[in-house]
Amino acid sequence: MHYTRDNMAGLLRSHDINPTHQRIEIAHALFSRQEHLSADQVMAIVNTRHSETSKATVYNTLKLFLEKGLVREVIVDPSKVFFDPNTDPHHHLYEVDSGKLSDIDAEHIQISGLPPLPPGMVTEGIDLIVRIRRKA
Amino acid sequence: MHYTRDNMAGLLRSHDINPTHQRIEIAHALFSRQEHLSADQVMAIVNTRHSETSKATVYNTLKLFLEKGLVREVIVDPSKVFFDPNTDPHHHLYEVDSGKLSDIDAEHIQISGLPPLPPGMVTEGIDLIVRIRRKA
DNA sequence: CACCAATCTGGACTTTGTCTAATTCCCGGA
DNA sequence: TCCGGGAATTAGACAAAGTCCAGATTGGTG
Ligand SMILES: [Mn+2]
Ligand SMILES: [Mn+2]
Ligand SMILES: [Zn+2]
Ligand SMILES: [Zn+2]
Image (cartoon, rainbow over all chains, first blue to last red):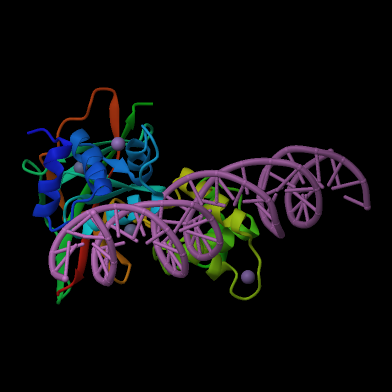
C-alpha cells in the first residue's frame, strides 16, 4: 500500500474529516513518508514548491488529525512534538544524539507487573521509549 | 531520610557540584518534596519569600544537576519538562487531564521482547509512561 | 583586605505553539 | 450562472518555555 494524494481524500473522509487541499497535502506529507514529523517539518514539506499553507493551518490540521485518530502524538523530545502516521499500537526507539525516532513493533513486546489503576481511571495509552546513544 | 537545607551541601558535593546558596535552595525544593517539578515551579518555590534566584540560574542549575546525575528529566507533557529527584530506575503514571505525575516502582515491572540494539549503540534509559484519564 | 575565578543576573532573543478577527473558499439552491 | 453562508484558511499578534550573553556579584584564598 502506498499513499498518493488521490488516496488521501478517502482516508480523510473515513476518519470524518472534510478533505480540503491543505489537509490533503498535510496528510500526504505524513503518510507518503511514514515518518515521524514535527509541525515545523510538515510546514516545510508542504510549502517547498511555493507557499501554500499557513502555520495556523498546519497546527490546526495536525490537532484535528490527532482528535480524529488519524495520527498519533509522540513526546520524546523536550522541544517539540512529533506526529506519527502509524496508529497501530507500537513503541519507539529514540536516538538521543541525532534525534532519529523509529518504531518498535508492539507485537513482540510484553509488559507485565503494572500496578492496578486508581478507581474510575482508564488507560489512554502506554508509551515505551527506549533511549539509545552511540557507545562512548 | 528527610532532606534539610543542611543536608543539601553534602549531597551536592557528593555529585561533584559546588554548593552555592542558589543550588542548595533549588536542590532543597526538589528533594524535600520528592516531587516532579517543572523549572517554573522550582522558580516559584525558590522565590516565595522574596526574589532570590533568577530564571537563568534556575535553568542553568537544573541542567547542571541533570548532567551530574543528581536529578532526572521526565518528558511527558509537550509543553514542559519535569525534573525528578528520584534517580532510581522507575516508571511514570501520568494523569493527562490534571497533569499529575507519579512514580511506578520499576522493581515489579517486567519488559520483555525488546529488539536487539543497532550495533555500537547503548541504552541510555527505558521510559515507560502509562497515560491515564478519568473514565468517560 | 584584595584578588579573581566561579557564579549569578537582567534582559534580549529564539522557538514552539495559540489565538483572533478578517478573508477566502466552496457547495447547494434559485 | 449567480448568490448566500457556513466552513476553512490566513496573517500576524501574542504567550510560554527555554537559551544566551555581557556585565555585576560573590566568596574563598593568599
Ligand atoms: Mn503543491
Ligand atoms: Mn530563602
Ligand atoms: Zn511511531
Ligand atoms: Zn519519577
